[in-house]
Length: 255
Length: 322
Image 1 (spheres, helix red, strand yellow):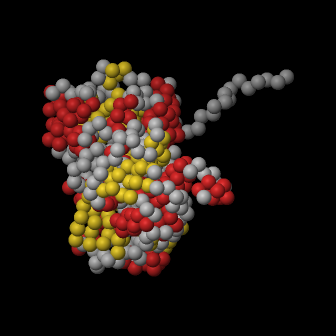
Image 2 (cartoon, rainbow over the protein chains, first blue to last red):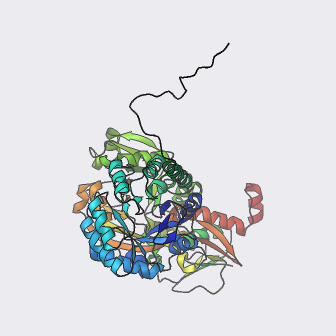
């Protein structure tokens, strides 16, 4: 899979918030073999930069995908992206413009506007969006080279609320990398996303808040691999009626 | 003579354990008085090892089990347990908390009303950690200071530590490798109209908060956990979240006065487990994270045993320290 021209082998992107400790987070990163970790940038971190947490993440060897989590306006998201570029020395930015604080639904109008500004400034934007096809087109027009549709509201663990919408996205944008971001709760959700033809899955809470985050990280990685392999193997069509799996013709003639 | 750097809860507990075994102890403290020890001064004062296990490693529970009895030697400890509640729409959080912790029982609405009449009718179910306790950390610190001074420990306030000390308990200021700061913010409110007598943990997926009664209508509300080294005062956002959650816990707290806010940096190792670290000739007691009052007694005991090379055999210990 190529993201902004970079070859990435692992199709699991992992968020770094809410783990019991940085030690558990690092073990989870190793267990799932992710190559990309997202980092939420808070204003304070920049003011007091050099905090041990960031250092630990950079030592993990993963690519850092800073995000604008918690930003509710275009201006806020753009400012945060600038700080992220400075702090992590990367053009990558996971762009979140939150429209509603309870559902954490993306404000797609603000998202497109912020994406346009950031792409013009040379950022490589990973936009957190809905499954809306028109919004997706506008984001690509703005200069994004990939899309990150939600599976369900952030942190809800509901799985894929609209698989048909994601399937339609896959069909509509056959060559654009699609990464399901948010809403994954269990390995089967991640596997389903991959079976639908998504290119990758980004998740955080499902691992961080699991009873055993390290095992869950490994399980997610396995599910994503299985789902991807299954998608490429072209699953059989569903049928309404039973079809025997044993041939009914040509019974052995025992003489 | 044994020298200690830092007169926060870790330094004082260490001094107590060493001095009570007959050592002569001097503590160097950069701050002018006890309130300069931000972590100890701003702490919640919960002695809640089982609740902490929700996110902490089992080692923290092990360290914390004896804390209640240890503090009871010098200061008033409220042994009324912890009540954990969740708003109706976040009931799943309560189930998750129960699954991840031990030594609790589920209590019904009727029992909640009996335990804390102020919360009657507000929650259908709660978790009760009966063996947990809390103390007033500021009073406890002052009482502990008196106790160590009675043992002959000298505390030199406003005095930076010399280059070499035997024991370093200065938290982030120790410069110890592997430590990171975890910023915490808290608020102190005066709510004479709401009477809550034990620690309440209010589970909320965005910001879980706790309310610790300090007596006479005072309550401590805490605390944020932010990976940051910023010392600036509490942010508006954090204050909103903490106070908003308190208001959701009980609307009566909306009428309380906000009497103090604070922000400090907890020292933490990567696994968030407090521990002793031997570096050269100095033993560090550090990484107490959010477990200062809970873990300091056990760490101090470990330290003293190390100094006096005690074994767990009581007779042997008596011979060595005699």
